[in-house]
Image 1 (cartoon, rainbow, N blue to C red):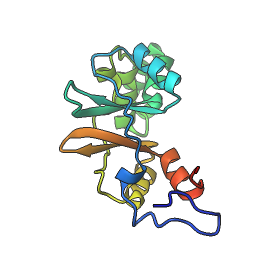
Image 2: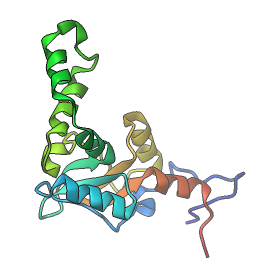
Image 3: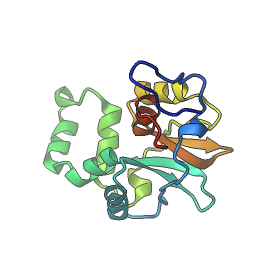
Image 4: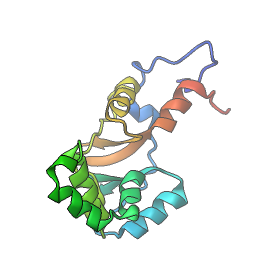
Length: 168
């Protein structure tokens, strides 16, 4: 398989599986780890998200740098109560506000992670993975087989597949 093409010839993303493009070197974290440990892991590895797994590599959630930035910013408590006390100032997205409020007080990865996880199977096409990332505005998809994380695919992986010629 040729994983990169010239600018005039692009690979067919519908004919290549996620397994052929995904990263199998999984960097993950446990729900019991601290958000500080997660931040160090993200920064050290220059990645934007981590699958959160149990001791058997079963997917529990995803922790993104966005989750930690929210946690690091800490909402101003008088502002929060002002918003809660004044119905006219209620934020347009109540669910997002509740998530940000919860994340602002998170101490563990389990508290800050997203539990509604979008994932894909290794047998799905790169086209499906790219569409999921685009539609859900995410940068990384855990690749899951029988509930276990077997890899991750990122926007960078897809860009390399589409535009970067393989190194011989």
